[in-house]
Image (cartoon, rainbow, N blue to C red; front, side, top):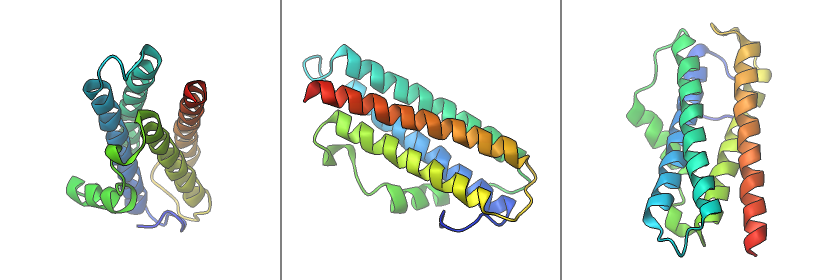
Length: 163
């Protein structure tokens, strides 16, 4: 499943949105894991708040994506197939691959931002007619992308204060 080509059908769109849902689940799980596994010396209040916010935001994004999928005239792809796609494309790094919680969080935020940017471009270049209002779809995805961009900025600022 490539995001570099225009989306041609409700089925492809549903699949892309489901990939976004799994990506958000990964971000939420990794943020929560970092918050739970670090001791007080390693995890200050600002970092903890950032991780909590990221987990909550990811849950919200997942809910918004799920609502869009529910509106499409398409059968959802089985979760295990989507999970395998996400793992192959985006899951090549693990939290322990990064030099610190903030680097991992930055990677997660940037990956999500890029994914939504690519999906929006694939929708906007499509000539297909979807069973969902395309303007509302793009608006929703653009808001999510903007929230991911804000997350990148928040993590970057926090990293700069720690340098």
